[in-house]
Length: 319
Image (cartoon, rainbow, N blue to C red; front, side, top):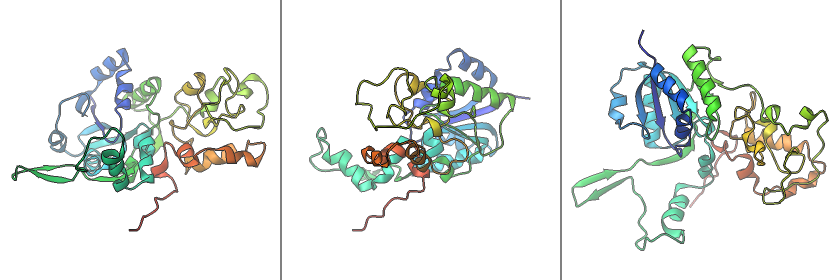
């Protein structure tokens, strides 16, 4: 039998997931020797969309899709990847849940374009030109841009076989996921490929790991409120940490360097709406309910990575 065929596509992301794969270093060489890469766009290989489109349906064994679906081009390639790949993986929190870039859904496209191309102090655009899906140059050259759509997770466009969280996924977890793929030891379809522990379970700051019970939160602080304690539980200290409801495939990397978890690993199993679960978890440990008034900008805080797949729906603005 030939080597498994692998494809990778970056949609509405920052290429951090791509760099996380490169960070596999020596192990990446072993992976590349074990697979045949047939498509890796746009960051690592000079291939064209037609190269992917011309492949037979079902001819690719595993496809990785990173970034959210933010325009018509992303949507088209998501559907092509689904047709060509036997296994399609939402790779990283943007593909899995919409990601931090999914916060654009709090605004309509007109607001975003006006801000980016007219209103920022550094913008030099005296004619107020905005991007257009189609434009004709010199009366004969028609250029086309993909049209913006609401930010969506991959499973809001096509069916997804597996999910991997992280912003980006930690390289040690990517290695374990690759080993599972190459060995065929995968969970049931539709599952997250995960170590199965919350961030708190693997966090050295967890008071239970130190032989004592957790205490209630007596104050709510922001990370600009210094000094941040070096070794105690950040949530107990008042820094809103989502470790209790976030998958810990990262090994609690943020709490280990004095930053509270913000949920990029994705929700623990059984959670339908990450933001609601996080609010419930935080609310349950506040000593006084009035402390909730000290939470600044709860939508951006609790839905930082999962707004597109949440129960919250955009408000339709009327002219």
